[in-house]
Length: 186
Image 1 (tube, rainbow, N blue to C red):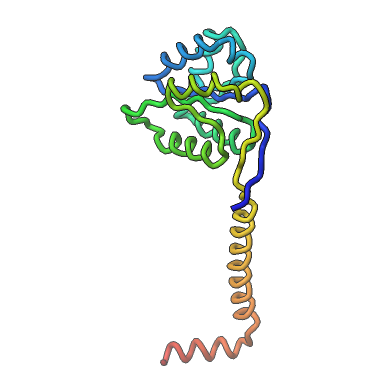
Image 2 (cartoon, one colour):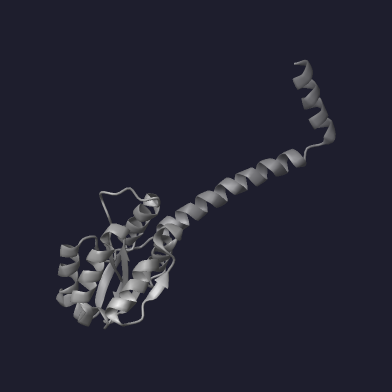
């Protein structure tokens, strides 16, 4: 597979997400790293965003709550290239009503190769990395051949359907009647 690159700018667009049992951890982490975080554009799901605005004293772009579609909104922004980095403190010990959304969000972060921290130690390593201070060229798989393959296969299937419909529609009425009689008496 071929790769392309996408620039992560010096001012990162960071998504901050936390499950209920991990919100306090994320808020403490954010408070500790406030000086670094306020230099970037911050995004968060529902309640987490409101709490972060209070703790950090800076604006946060807020999506819906995770179970109400917020995780999917974050994923869409990642796919569109509008989020560069994600801190997601998820709770591995509690079942979530939106587990499939959580899995989809983590999957899309991997598909688009953005840095992701799922716990405090990883978040510490990422935020203190020298790569946070400048631009970064991240590699992304070139999905264009995949997109074209899907479209070509779809078009080919549709063309075969249309050809079959056209062939049966252009037969003489007597041929269709003969086939019907043959099948009935057959």
